[in-house]
Image (tube, rainbow, N blue to C red; front, side, top):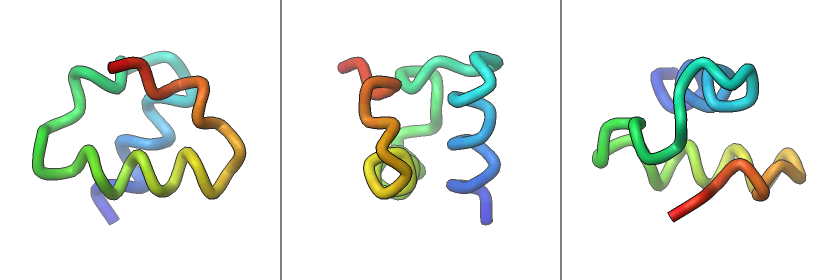
Length: 43
């Protein structure tokens, strides 16, 4: 649930991927990749 919340914030450019809590980054990464939006992942 929180991973989806942060994924939406990243997509809406409200939060950068690097600002997502470390514990949620794998889930957010999977959501973005599954959605074809992996370009939002900047490490």
